[in-house]
Amino acid sequence: MELPSRRTFAVGSVVALGALVLTTGPLYRVRTWWAFSDPLAADVAVVAVQVLVGAVAIVALATDGRWRRVDPRMGVVALALVAWMAFGALWSPDASTTLRESLMVGVTLAAGMGAAAAVTERTLVVGSWIGIQLGLAWSAVVIVTVQPGSQDRGGEFAGVYFNPNSLALVAAVGIFLSFVAALQLARHQHRWIAFGVLTAAIVADLWLIIGAGALTPLVGLVVGLAVAGSAILGRRIVGPVGRWPTDAGRVSAVVGVGLVAVATVAWATRSSWLSAVGRSSTLTGRTEAWDVAIDWFWKQPIVGQGYLGAWFDPEFAAAQLAARGEVLGSTHNSFVELLLGAGIVGFGLAVALFALAWIAAGRRALTGVGLLAAWPLAALVFVIMENLAETLWVGGQLAVAMLGAIVVVSTSQSSSGPPPEPSSAGATIDSEVDVVGVERGR
Image (tube, rainbow, N blue to C red):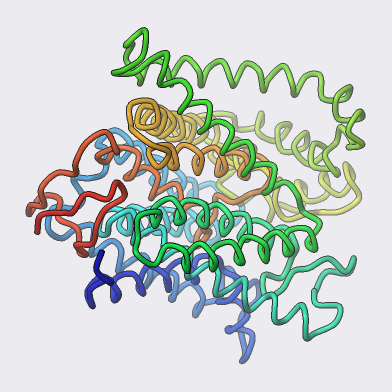
């Protein structure tokens, strides 16, 4: 296998830079080197850089017909969701926040879609891995050289990400991409060097997660890998070579409904099993914030309060303060946040988008060949679980870009056969060997 071409190196560098920006921490840290507006998420320079990243990806998506790689149903649902969220600015307590975050979510989704549509899966994974590891390496240096190595009052690691949860999330993504990259590079002539680097990165990322004291991302990663592994084993039962060659999409849908039912039962009985593992049934006060948000949701159940706008309502803030003794600034659950801010309409559109992505990723995992066919499913499960524990459905957030990439990759050519010949309707920018090791005829 030849070394990457100059074009592949160039587009890979763009992907790496985009991933670095969308982890927010490094961008925020650089911005604090001179005068900035608070909060940083609304700072003009920060938003401008994130918009520029999205614009580059949108241009790539719009040229050479690459937009055709986006499943029409998921594309329409995503567009409708962003439009509805933005429309909520008309009745939001803080119209500028609702409008800005809604449009930035759209830009970030498009950034993920554009990157996945314009490059091969290997370039997408390796480029993203490089960008993420740059931020993590910077964090490691800060932690080692600056005592206590964190801005968190409890002494947990935060690095350049300003809080432990953000650092742990990015580190978990870094670990996941290390595994995927190792599989992609398994046939590379320099694979042993690559394996050594990737193993060292996994160890370092684990150290950061443990130091951050935020193990939720690690749990999400383990569950994601377990679900992907189950899909791979399920190929013996369903799919083209299974004992019962049932439609894989229908199987994914049924399994998804079953998992939601199991999760519902687990939530209803959480007091018993959470206490058994030494955790509070309030999930460190999160459920108290959720209860207040759901109470306010019922005031405008159809249209919602305006996405993230309720937090600027003095009465809502007072209710949060009375319920848990402090105001967090978000519910720490993207789905509750969507229910509160975008109402039943927005929540339904978001659930539809995740459901369609789940069916597509599940179909690819069940009908593909090899382990790599299941990586989008593992990534999607991780994104869903993280959104259940944090409010990540915001502009410039890596998890949003990941969903955008998953939407494209899940419906692309699986590893059950060679990739399609490039054409003006779906050409990629780079021409390296793709995920299944089949040379793209270019």
